[in-house]
Length: 281
Image (cartoon, rainbow, N blue to C red; front, side):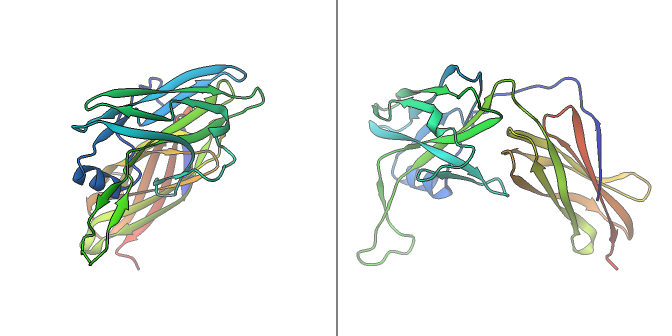
């Protein structure tokens, strides 16, 4: 695998992401079946906080149900797996936890049908803080009764619909952005109908980064046989993210190069290359 850096574009744009960050697919199913529907905005609370000072931010919980609901909000630690799936941990503290530095209110509240509630968070980072601190606000609705997919006499399932917003907090002026591609794997499909790609990225800095980019399959003459966007994802400091994607391409026998171009917020783009032969010998 060959790695190199190239200058990044001078102009960058930022957008607010208000999609839901839902803990489990089962949560969505339970909420829909029980007529419990609610929204948490934004999905990511991303704030730069000067050390020794307090910044106030928050989330909005919207009750989309036809009746009043009582909600509970708790702070939890955040862990992102290699595939990007998020885990929230309410009973432990990770080294990058922001939970001890957040004061949140209210923790319990009732929202009328179609109403909203602002949950206030005051974040104060100690003066010695460097880099990023992370967590989540987990908002839960009342438990609901759900019939099992295969009913059995006396069998019931009680589930609690939950939605979480990620807390991505950085100490202002202390960010060290770094990253590298640690591995690339190219797996051509049968009959040359496309190729499955795995790109492994490690965040070597002290703050989270948002990784995006694209992957191209180049033939022996340097022409693109196929291109696909890399699924965008957040990578916490010191952790690894595996990006998996399929690139549509019609492969003829010969040598090819997979080129991954990653933008993770640094001054340069990160480029990795992996060569392969089709069909494999």
